[in-house]
Length: 485
Image (cartoon, rainbow, N blue to C red; front, side, top):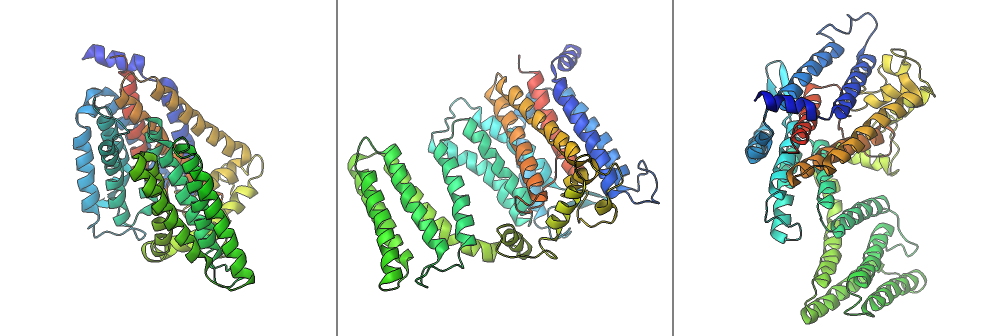
């Protein structure tokens, strides 16, 4: 046991621990700046938010120490058990009578409130690592891929039922790990297409073409589906049917163009109906070639065309019936469909003002006017980056981003040097989660991404968030320290 402990301290990656400590310290000073009011007790007073954050930092260091002291095989052996416990907690939280800011994602135990969704991330990463590490696992097998997707989507669905959509979307970051482990690029391609279809279809849904019958949104998306299907056929089926891609492009694209011209200048009609018929023809043609040649690529293109149509026409239902009103208005403001500077756009506008007022070097610690006058809601949690921008300016903000990028790059190095697939998978899960939080949080503060309410790692005020990220990181450091075994 003594040798094991000595080897841990010898092999642990101190560069990563150093970055962690710097980020946590910078995060505490940011919480001080965001939450401090003149006349309040000092920062170390436990009744202040800065004092509570400092206490949680102390607990986090203790948690990290305990994690490093445990045997590394614990995380592999009990991965499924930990995942099962977190699933039960997520399920039970749905029926939690305590609702905080419209969300039922918190477990309240007296004065302590915990958010299981923050801790379910590391349990999900462990379960993925253990399953993918199995000897018979192959990403190309449909059964294996379905199981992996189930491990990811189950906690995601439970968190959505808790009305915590932002935390649920974080689980999409695991797909970056799957891509590293051999998931075909078509899945990533389909995801990008889904985002483009959603944005284009929603943003231009209310705009009508000159024929006054056809929606620009539907027309644009269906045109993309037709053109992309011809591209996919040309890329993956060209050897078997060299001219098929050209036929799909010519008939589908040409038919769409002729239909639009006919509708605009001769007899107006909804061109989207013609496009749907062309898509149906593409599906039937590809089905014929699939049955004749038994080439699976035809089947995948069929799935793309049919899936794109189903996804696009279901987005209207999801947007209007599933999303909460505040989520809808945030998306509409982001896409420029509505202007609501006093409502949904207030947070982002005030955040931009705060960051812009910081200039190059900032106003200095505790000197931010936007911060002191509480113009930015949630300025010490989801919008804490605006406090950094106002008090420390462009230089300070760039330094924080540099620290995060150094951490992510270091995690890539650690992940690639793992001797086991379990360690590599878990490492890529960790860095994917950090990257997603960093990109979305800073993006929403700058008005580049929707406001979905996820914290900035190690900076945002809150014990659950800090402990969750600490557990994520230190479990990986413990696995890495034992890689040579």
